[in-house]
Image: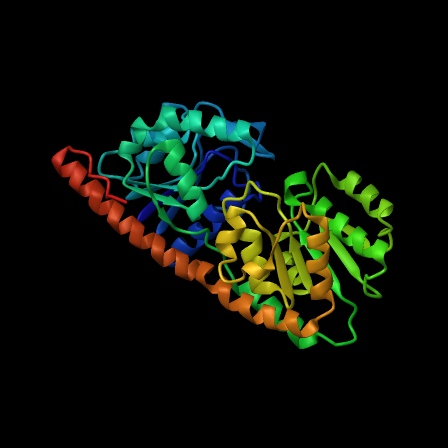
Length: 392
């Protein structure tokens, strides 16, 4: 098939939607499909068949710094569509100025598939998404298959856009994380000092501050294990504030801030942890970072108890924590730090749980959705009628 993966943002950014597009695109290409990327403002030289349709401007949304496209010219869209795509796979919610125009101009025989990605955190973000949904409900009739990355995202999409969908989780290429875990287990020694790792953006909703508060409580109680190392990896506007907080909690000699971690170094960092702490406060529709940690860690993963992360941690709910309940979070950390056997058992369960999100599994499911969408598009192209939406 010739597949166009449509995203309103640049693929230069390392966020979850971009990871979904790139992971799926590379896997589809490895299966022999002809994959093109219809994007905005992408400059990375390692990607082939990129069609930049517009320029983006930076905005803040749902606690993140995002970018939104300007109006994509009809000529640029038509030149891309002239390639003759079998499937256009659009990341949603999308801008009416780029992906919306691509959908409107797509030939009737081209199958249009959408994947819904977000679960807004704030009232303002939810209201904005609902407003966008009201504008775009009419266009949803042109779409042949509706997917969402989690049940929580699908439920929100149904309310905001008035359309039901099926869950197709974010695909993750697990092999580098599996290999890093095997190497870390082989190299581990019972004499090693425990290590806690946080990896993510240093913004409030990702919960690094909550982790420091919980560790600070343990430090005040004198219950931190000797030699403990805490790594807060990532960049973001809260870095200086978090560094001050570490000092104020008496953790200045315990916590390190290595900054940005390249994609090729993530697996080894996660595998080195006895505890991977990902205490997001909310606003998560899925948890790619959680899946990576589940596959890589030689120890235990503690994740924030929010709907997106809960969908990934199914069967591991005893490892969910409320980051804003500092005493409970501290107790969860202390219990795992004191029990190497429990950490090793958790690692085995986690490794097995991560397999359902491997790109080989998810990719095959997505191909099934493409096949059904192509069938719907063929019926529409032949009859001139919109295909009936299956009952939920």
